[in-house]
Image (cartoon, rainbow, N blue to C red):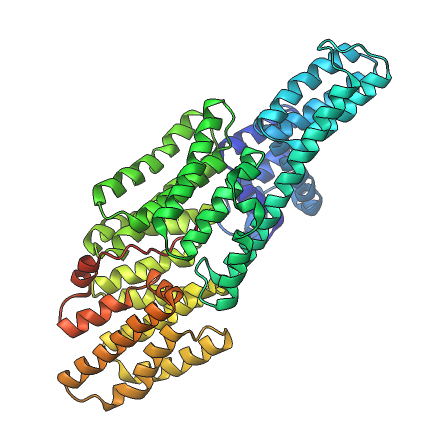
Length: 521
């Protein structure tokens, strides 16, 4: 796809308006070629060079289109750089230090110091340690020019502050290294370690001396990592309340920073989102869940008033629908889930590039929703969409779960011909990815070895009881195996067949709250 087209389509309305205002100087009484080209590209739904030329209807631009596109690309990046210059702490500090350098080189040391003091305060509040080291270099330069500091700073105080900064930075780097190491394991296991070596690696990291006591974390950024890693570890063990307590402490950190006027919207939203994820996992009171979802969704209005970019607000809206659909679906409240599914399906199409959770997770929820509503055609449609998505390999866990769900749909619809073909295909698929875990093996063995030998309702019930007992025993022996239920409550489905009740009814009785959710790192 064309790079310029992708860049234009990624821009918000405010960014587009700023581009036209910022570069209005390029137009000499008439609409500039760059704005004409920008508008034409913006009107395209998909990039097509012939359609673009037709929309432009300008031989001069058409004759040098490649050059015009290249220059427009650089103009847009320049416009975005200017647009965000005063919106990002990093940009503010970078520009301030550039100003300080200009003043320093002109020997306007008093003015330079004023900028350094202001920048230092911002850097300390936002824990920008690399910038503080750069500011220290300026102070050394002023000291060696025999400039008398207005705040009575001495060479010793400069070194003391630098030592403290370096110590804080080194401490944060150590925590970030632990975070990245844990993330690699979590990414492979998709948050739930079903392999012994993965669980062992997680325990090793969480046993690190820096993760024994939060007092070892010298900064708020380090404390956030401390809480995050403990929360993720508790999630891997399915201790949802404990995970929630750690995420709640993250939220409190964000709240304190917000009260100081120092808050990163992405950080704050991520903390609130992570806590809400765990709330949905253990909370049985639907009213409490709805309030949590309402509070999270209301962040969009809050940030709108603050002038925060719509991409962040879109992310909040999408993920709040995602969580709501997931909660209803996994708790057997399929009619309630259906009421939000239409809005969610629209969000999946429109906002998929701005969500925390991968689009495959949304399709999986919709597949389970229509399975619970006994609309097996629609259910099968969404599970196949997961497998047909080129990016599904990035979420191997969901793709494998979708394979199993297709077998279950074939079973429900008594499509034995397709089921026997699919079970062989599924087994090969899982073997290739080394994901034939005990749970999957029990289910596949039942279909492969038992289905053809069942001729009566009594025999079927008997075999299903055996499968249920095997699964429950497996979950007790290997607790990590129970994480399969975070995709689909297989025990409830088996029980519905045994008791001849609806799947939705059994799920509501069991009150399993294990949605397919991803937390932010």
